[in-house]
Image 1 (cartoon, rainbow, N blue to C red):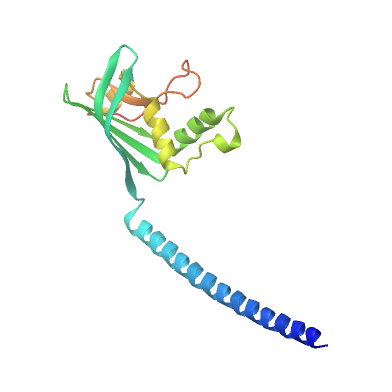
Image 2 (cartoon, helix red, strand yellow; image 1 turned 180 degrees about the horizontal axis):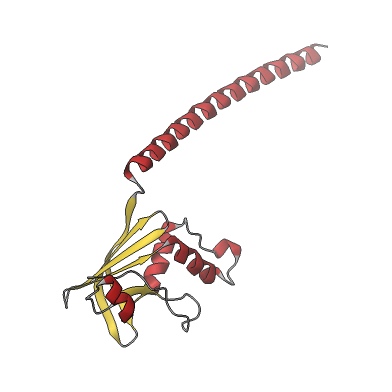
Amino acid sequence: AAKRLQAVSRGRLCRARLAKWHRAAGQMQRLVRGHLGRQRALEEERRQRMGAMVKEMYRGSASLPRPDAAPCHVFLQVLRSGCSYVFTAQDLCTAETYRGTFPESALLGFLKQFNEGRAKAAQVRSKQHEKVTDILIDHLTLVQPIAAVADLARVEGSRVLTVRAPLDTRIEPHLLDFGR
């Protein structure tokens, strides 16, 4: 009988301790969720006031291929706002600046083609910004601007930055905004 009373007593104490832990865990979750909600609200308020945040994803040297000549060694800067990317490359030998943008709509199509045939775990998603930046840099190229579009944009530059298609090199690259 003493063993049974002790077991009941230990069980009651264990359940009371477990209930206390559950209340403490609920309290911690409530505090963390409240903090995260306030952070989200502040970020949304900041975004409403200031617009989308621009983040520098890459700054450094790169070697960009050209379809008609040897690769061009440039100083490259990649900026991101949401899932849209802006590229600026400076050729220090010729003092030319090349620019290009890659909007979110083009990125989604590019990633769909890039992920084709890959296992689900190996697929790259648009929110994996560091991986996306590396892939876009690997697919950057310098091409001649389209004359009609260049005239409309009043571009005087000799080349523009584009992103080559990931799988089929016969597909025309996405034309990017350009300028000097």
